[in-house]
Image 1 (tube, rainbow, N blue to C red):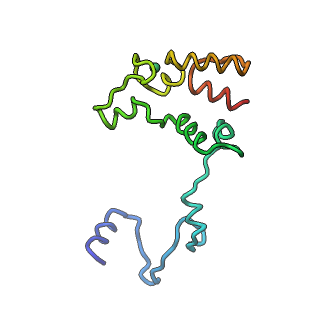
Image 2: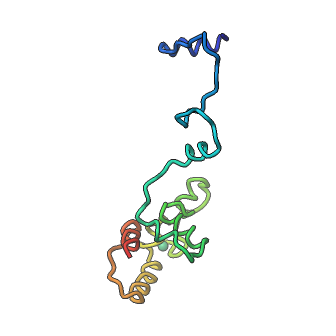
Image 3: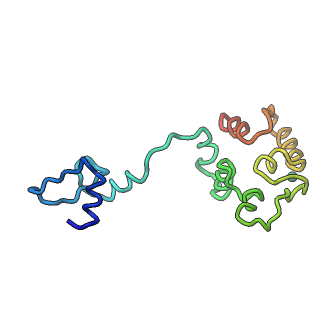
Length: 145
Ligand SMILES: [Zn+2]
């Protein structure tokens, strides 16, 4: 045994190898210890519960670019200026539409005067009651329809 392995052994008091057995390689993600590409993919792709807005974003006949942008917006990952500023402090943070507030997701979609005008027209076109002015509430509302 090498010095490194002895050091590891000293940190693992329950480690008691059976020197009469041959060493072997065992793939831990499967119960039988046999490696396969499928078992690797299964170990990397742990299932996650579906989010409520799944069908709002991913549906047949969608426009992939639009759905990707919506997905980014829902996840709060659009390059709004508040986020860009974290990586590049030389970039200003004022909203590009109104130049009066910090550009965040909430401001860009609901709080900005420019956005409010668009939402007002959109609401009238759809004839739907408006449930509030926050991104999470809007996504929850839209996902139910
Ligand atoms: Zn604005």
